[in-house]
Image (cartoon, rainbow, N blue to C red; front, side, top):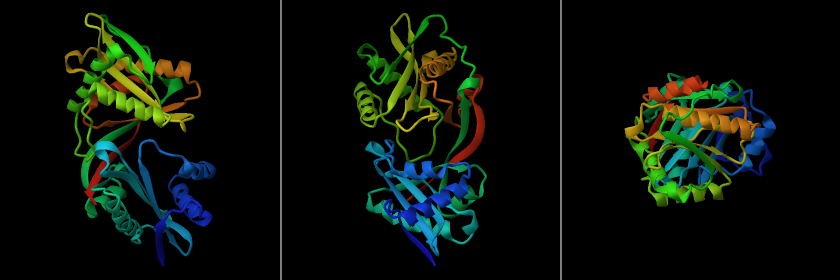
Length: 315
């Protein structure tokens, strides 16, 4: 008989069953790390809902859904994973049916999976259960020792960097540059992007500080105006040791096509290698339609390792 319950971190047997499913899906994972990660707070989510499905005590499947905050507080993002020995037996569907009421009770309207392998059985399963295709993304990985980071700012621009707090004299143009991301190739995800104002930038910085995130920012400043016209950021979380994720990259429309995106990202790579030598790899995800940024990443040494889709459904 299949039993599905919320994961109780004080229940050793349940934690072992949950971890067994994770390790069966990714045998390269470390058990001790996988268990420890369940206790670590995730600054990206206000709450994480975890369910574990057991059959005769053994882990059959798991789900983990993180609730976003702010303007996206009615959206949850997560995964449903079934142990290979229990697939095609209705475990995934049972987990979904158990998860949705949990999310509705928390005021969530939509549930999305952001890392479903394109063309996989998981995508077909999601489609058959009411999920729609919301986006396609290219996942790339950079090994920092293999990076090609020789690009510099073109004539008429200078590069600046900081951690955490935007200098006051650059705040307005940083907000305007972040706002320009709204015209990047879009998705049909339920996730909303903020309207970037100086106040929103400060609020975002404060949230990162409160969560213990080291927000590294590199910008390109136009010499004649003193305005930021391109930026990129890497948020390094407290739990990041050898691996981290790239944040966002934006170039204002009037300054595109001049190599500024490549320049700020190359500078970031050099900075990370010099200042965070323990980092080995950086992952990034780019909308598949944004072929320009994918090529920029390739020039830096990023290698594509997965094509994924975002799937979305109402709760």
